[in-house]
Image 1 (tube, rainbow, N blue to C red):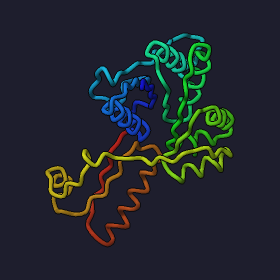
Image 2 (image 1 turned 180 degrees about the vertical axis):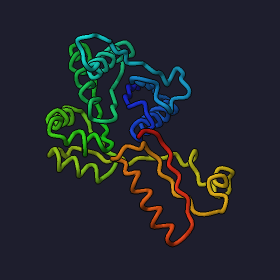
Image 3 (image 1 turned 180 degrees about the horizontal axis):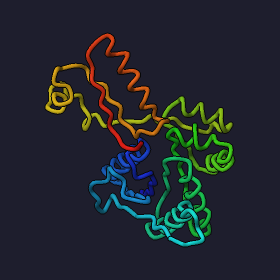
Length: 236
C-alpha cells in the first residue's frame, strides 16, 4: 500500500509513535509518505519506502498567522494524486484530520482517499474540548473513515466530550527488540553513581504533562529512600 502519514515533527508521543509506525510499515513492504511541516525527529533515514514531503508555508502580509491547515490540505491532496496514495493516516485530530478531510473532498472526483484519525490525548481533552474548537473537532471525527485512540481512557473521554463512540483502541507501543531493560550500563551509572533508584519522565515540559508533579513525587520518595529524578524532553 501507499500510505500518507501526518504527525507533529516533535518529541511528543504522537510524533514518535506515528514515525515508528511508518518505519515498521515500510519494513513490512509498504511505501510510507510522511507529510509534515518539518522532518519528524525519528526519521533519521529516508529511502524509497520512507519518503518525506515538506508542507511549504506562504508568507503574506494579510495573514496574521500562516494558514497551516490549508497548506497541509493542499500538500496532502497533491501527494495523494502524484504518489497514488491508498489512504491518509493522521495523528492528532486538530488540525490534521480537518486538513485530511479537505484533501479527500478536493480530489474525490478523481479518486477515493480514506482518512484514518488517531487520537493521542490533548487534541481531545484540552484543544478539542475547548468550546471554540469542539464543533470542528467533532466534525473531523464524524467525517473520518476510521478513528483510533491510544487508550481506553481517551476513548471514554472522547465519548463524554463529543458523544462519538466509533473508536477502536490501539494502545501505544514500544518495540521490545529495540527497547530492553539494561540493568548494568554506563548511562545508568552516570545518572546514579551511588546505585539509587532512577525515576524518569520522558515528554515535553508543558504544564499539561505535569512535570511539577514529578518533583513532588521525588520529594515523597526521598523521605523513604535515595533516588534520582531524570527529566528527558524539551519545552518550557
